[in-house]
Image 1 (cartoon, rainbow, N blue to C red):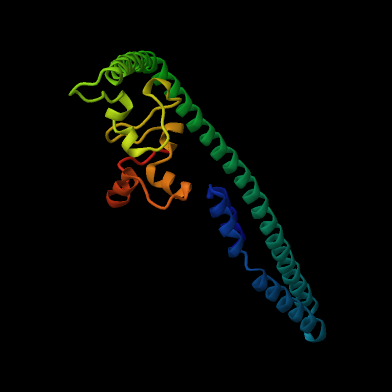
Image 2 (spheres, one colour):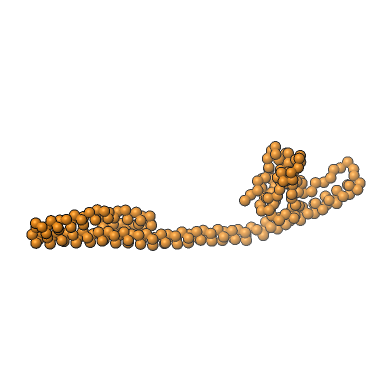
Length: 226
């Protein structure tokens, strides 16, 4: 049995496989074999010949050695299991690091390749929105001074729907992160703008605004992205 276990121990590769071999070492059976050998020796001393006694003693020695080997085998299995667990933890840690490093390298490569042009486009949009808001504000000021049948011009943020959705917002060109638009839920601080519904709850007003009522009826259009 022990010779077979030695062979299996050499084949085992994982800590789980190695640990499972400990159950194969039957210490109880080995102890019973030693006890039986000692009983035979005692009987030989009483009734047997010298040859019988020497043979019985030989069997006791063999049984004792097998039992000691069993204990040593369990200790060796446990030692190798611990070594295997340490090696597995190191390998897993190294693999996790490699995955994390690969993710960083991939992000850096893509950002270096795509971000500059995307940033320029966003800045271009921000400047366009700022100029448009300035033009609208100037016209609205003129209209207030000399109103006619025309209506005031909504700023860019209102036309994008932000004023309908959020009680607290900022102009597009002053957003500190990516604001929401259409099916994009925003990213960063802009995604946490206070909605009219939340503003109504926080303000403790008796009657919600028309914006808050509409949001209560149909729900929010945008869900901030994590």
